[in-house]
Length: 457
Image (cartoon, rainbow, N blue to C red; front, top):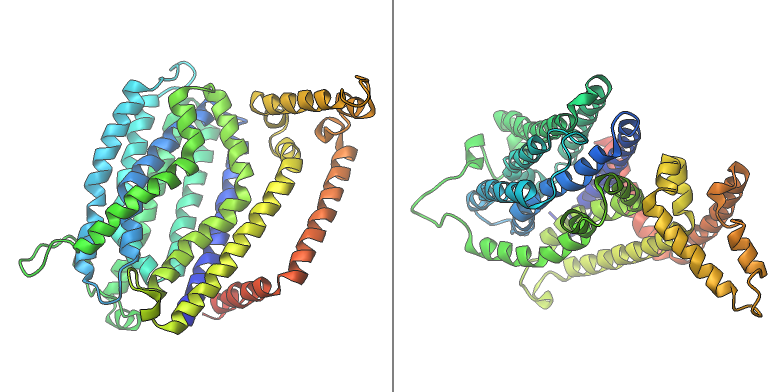
């Protein structure tokens, strides 16, 4: 498979990932808005911060490094050794879920059972759901290596939709269940996700003609199970060493990704209700980054792993592949930089308005945001005292009279604020479109072509 074909597949995978993220975020936001009208924000805080952190930490420690190492393998590798290595994620997951579950139950603050009921059950079930998801790891890696785009879309979409439907139904009819609701929904999500991959490969490998067309490295389902023979080592030790290397490197990423949840969980800087509000605000603030950056990272990691051979000098590799990889890397870095700068500039100016529209006064005027707004007003007032020593200067009156705080001035002020921002954003995007011709051509060629390919396939 040539580098151009791999690039096209990676673009299709990234496009589908972007669509999935849009679906997931829309469902999550609607679900949060629905849940907050029936359950307390303390329950939302426990689920979205404490229990989700337990789940994500277990998953990260057990599989993140294995995924990256096994996706980096060459086409001539022994897949049975790769599957053996991937199955080690299950006992690791059991160990980490038990250890972290003990920490969550014994060392961390336990919520008041009169406010948040069934906390212990939530910890156990979220840890169990992490182990269940690890059972599908060999299937997931094989599907990613073969770039089965539709399988990923169907499996993850179906899992999220069923989880959301179950959550909404239980919240509406059995709100007194508390954390039972989210525990059952999380377990359903991981179970459906794994079953989708298992059922797909069961049907695929059951058809000899389909298997021949896909050119899979396996011929039956038992090939995915652990196997021990005397002819070779149980695992590929190069992949095992690479896994350990990725494990050490990934800690920084995990801290940066989940840092605020670790701080809230272990240092108790916010109560459970404010943690729930903060998590909603944080998810809204990181919306665009999750929509764009995460699918690109996951998909194009596979592209670079397939096109370039790890550990081999660039001069010894196929120069056409090196040139394509360099062009793609340049375009992706520029896209990430421009997107990040745009989000930073407009995010500061429109975060309060977005929160006010989404969640009302509970988010835009809650304790999490009030501290930020109060410090901003105080700083602005101090600066205004420097204009000829008059405390009621023009800038001071603007701040104290809340002219800048559009959310407190009604919809006319909000609409004016939105109109100014829309005009500025249009100018920004138009300038980028006219000046960054190379980047625009890359996006048109790859992502535009990927949508066309999906329609015709």
